[in-house]
Amino acid sequence: MAQNETLIERTLSNLASNLANAWRDIAQSAARTVGRNGGKLDAARAGAEPEALKAFMTECLEARGGEVSARMRAAELGETYLELDGEGRRRFLEVLAGEFALDAAALDAAIEAYQQADVPEVKRNAERRLRQASTPPRIKLLTQFNSLPEGVKFLVDLRADLLELSDRAPALDDLDADLRDLLASWFDTGFLDLARITWDSPAALLEKLIAYEAVHEIRSWDDLRHRVESDRRLYALFHPRMPEEPLAFVEVALVKGIARNVQALLDDEAPNTDPEAADTAIFYSISNTQKGLRGISFGEFLIKRVVQRLSAELPRIKTFATLSPVPGFRAWLDSAPQETVEGAFSEAERGGVRALGGSDDVQAALATILARADWPQDPVVRKALEAPLLKLGARYFQERRAGGEPIDAVARFHLKNGARLEHLNWLGDSSVQGLARSAGLMVNYRYLLGEMEKNHEAYMNQGRIAMSAEVKALVRDGAAGDGPLKRLGLG
Image (cartoon, rainbow, N blue to C red; front, side, top):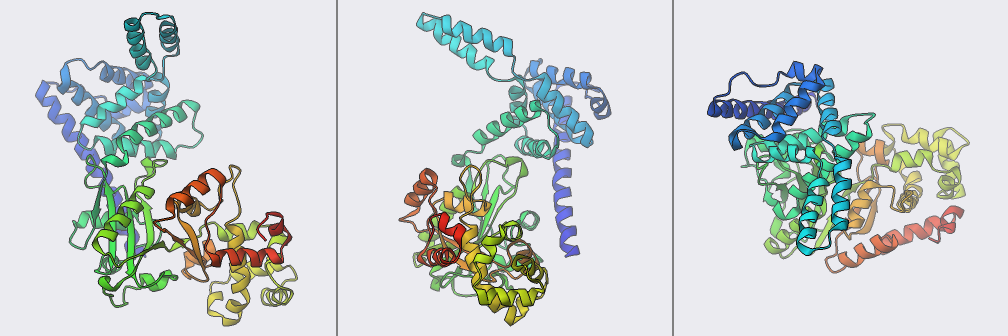
């Protein structure tokens, strides 16, 4: 574990160092081209003197001296940012957000001119000026980085820094919205490339996958090698301006039948199977890699592209499903109404849990049992908890946020994509993390190619969750003895 943490830290540190070196090389090369010497803004001064920073940003916007000079200034500004400490970067972003925001007076004047224009040519000119007036100057400044090597990655990382800031002023929220919209236009799925990652891929890329894996930790190089063997697939999305940086990746196991236990799936000592004999593709890990692209979704596009590729390469595969975590279930179980929890247990089961947990309160006794790290190894406990926790799992997926969506983030993602909630898997993940976040529960979301659009529309328009007959039966079983479930109309 410690060795893996060192690898992750080294990989992320190298990414930051390489980016800083790239900016420095760009600035120095451009400065030599235009014969400029010593004009760079000192990072310490920029961090301490907002006015100096504002003046340098203004100089960048004015773009005097032609394209090479503009390129040099943009590189110098980027290099300055990278040299700042955390407080200096906050000040940099505050100057960018506050001093280069939308000019409200200019916008009002442009709106008035457009409304008063009554000749077609005058109205067209007024419309162009209105579009210009409604674009904050900071957008033009940010766009300058797009022409530089590593410039797009710089802006992605800059937004990641912005998202990390706590107690943000409204101006920083506006800057975030502008930057998100700018990046969303650049990272439209039409610009993205899908590539299969193999053991022969560059080592630097494989290191990044280890660092970025967000669902099931890659424990070693042997573990990674197992995940790209012949009966596995690992696909990643790339942007042409960030060819060495995966934006998102998905790990797939080619198996017979729907896999329902992740430990069996991740066992790197298990023998490889023949991918030509597989009839099912299991998507067992989907990771977004760039914090600065939060709110810009690639998952739906990634899954659909992978399904298309696998269908073409391996026509025997007819079933596409996930093996997904239930990250909020354990926390929900602790805070659920007492009557909801007790309603999932029969009278005999309540007595058993009280005895096993040493409390007359069923919910407290359940919490005590689940807090024990070794409870899955006790056959008596497993038998006592299986049926009630599966009912409560079905209940959990009916819980909604204020906007009407399920409270489970993974469910929101797959249901929006048109998947069906297929199976609830008892002790599908018995790892320390799996027990802590979901009491070991995992689920399969199934992507039925002929039903995805219908399921998507029903979910988006009516909030209806597509479920298999098995899950519906669990919902009915829970509703039979639980008043709250009946009031939801699920009985």
